Image (cartoon, rainbow, N blue to C red; front, top):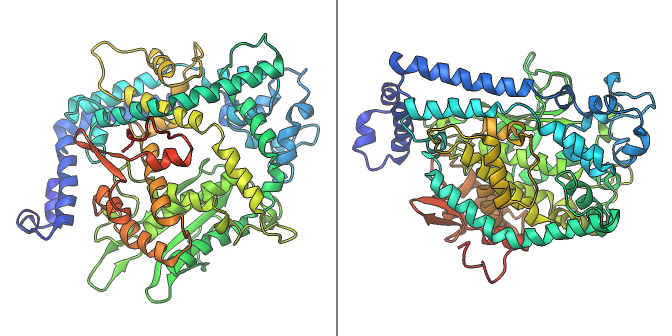
Length: 590
């Protein structure tokens, strides 16, 4: 690896030239890789064996999932007791979903002619609408039960880190090129944030529990884990009177794509239009190829849009890099090529496909990742776009979610699919109000997940630990939700299995994005000046510049804090936005 680095970057230019920080940074990355993963026969074979062991453990854990979890909630419904009255039980959900799709796959059609059950792929959606507590609890417990095979993964990753990479833990290995620098910095940040939101989260928990007591009587003393989604949905519906079908009527997919075009045009002065593909270029007839074109600079990059769900397709929503941008010569640049993959429900007429507001936020989130890659201009592919420190990578995507919530942006593209009416400002305020209800509870949950992640992949004791007891202990410390004995939520949480020791990055990004929005974008989110600053000070560098320097150059001092040798975000803007900051803890987040 070191030889390869020296071959592409002359050693003299690295060691002696003070004007080559980028080459020095690239060499440092290769040097760290060489230090922790020596590429020779002595170490290569055990490293490969342990890596295969960790992947086998992951595959085994997914095989233990019940078939209905793997194939959607439709199987769950079919396998339940016959005394459940299906139409009545799912009427609230169906009233929203009936217009979304008439499933192409007839296996998703019930004897009553109801459609759309394949969209219920997690217990969360199920728990929001089902009033029978026994069914909510049964589904949650079934979903998070199973053999604790994550322990196998943790052991394999720990052995890789210890015996081969020379690190005390897998978390320490992950942190080497991150802003946080060490697991200790991350855990300290998470614990501090947990303390800041605890009082408000406790208040919210009591509010939810009191509603349950009002609804079902004093015999129901405790709020169970399967109750929260149901009662919070009830309260949000009561407070804001939101009709999901009405909301989605303003977010037809073609209009949402117009929203992406609006961002590119307003912020960056470029167009975002479909272009023809060469024979054999597309992997499916539905795929669109888009080009970002600047009137003075020419083509900036290409983006494939693969929007609709189909059998055998990658099941989530994600951004994939097909070709990274890089400098070929002084006059030639290799343009980046990206793909956005979604699984929106498609009807027989694509012009009436409509998204809910959460799906719109996801679209804008992934587009933020794509813009990060398409607008970066780096000498080396290794620094192109999202190839940045892990705890910075989600910042642009989180920032662009704000554009999906701002009425000044939405009114320019969100129109009723049949009447053309602009989305009402009152409706947007209700959406944002409902989203911010129980903000402390949701933030506390994310902190808990991140702490579980750090603990599982942190330094291990000589005696193997029971991962279940770890999760239960952290839940008691950092959550009001009770732990359900005999369940293993951590093997159902895919980020722990594929994104180990990195889940805290979402909280870093949430804080960074809140500060950028407040200081730079909030006053005039579609201003060309705002777009120029985002492009020239944030997006164009990819990973070629230290993220803390990028953030400070963009909005000034105060967005980051230096703590115990690492870097953590200032949480003030994030907590102020969620109305979680008071005079008692205002000084803590700075």
